[in-house]
Length: 274
Image (cartoon, rainbow, N blue to C red; front, side, top):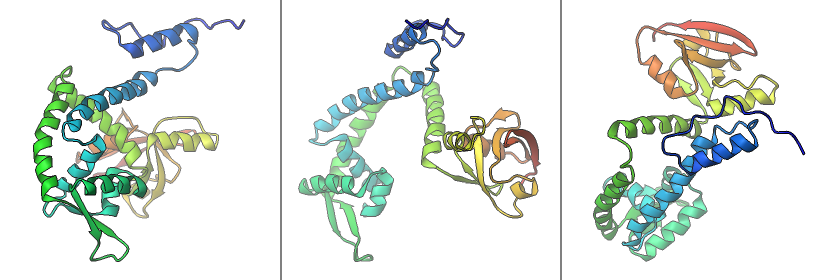
């Protein structure tokens, strides 16, 4: 029987009130202390909260004979403003769904008289979707109840804690929604999770950071000597894992100092204010 590795200092302190994920982490700390299970603390909690939230939200929508998926369509059209109309292709992108999935949802809502779907007057191959008068009235009925329900679901967090969590989740989501981002410094950046994979694929150390994929000639980044393939690791001494952090640092007017890796060699560049 293989010998178990001794416990490591990665074992987190036991919380005052543990949850089900703490139990998972504690079991792995005993059974496989060599495994880097720290991500479970975030990813599994997000998954379990999503399951609980979906159950709670669905209860409200069911009162109106709708699903949560139905409501996302209604809300997207209502946010578009009068006349509450969007091309189906735009609606698909805003919902982050495939054409087939959107079509299924729209067919269901058309049958209920909540949306109307017709050929686009500007694109012979396109379709426009409009929230009907009944659909707009239904939104006005549901929205206050739905939002009050969401507020109740977050009752364990103070307003400040909710804002802190929202800020952290934004950093995570931006990394996936912006597979590349263009900095005002004149460079295009790959997010940290892609940067790690790209460097590992060519045999470079798995170091978190933002990977430069393109530099605009004669830009501030170009003038500072930054090149495609460089990995930005910190800005003004703050670890750099999100373009959000970089954007916040650039909001000042005194310029920034960026630390970066070129291959495995460490460098610094001072970028003057724009």
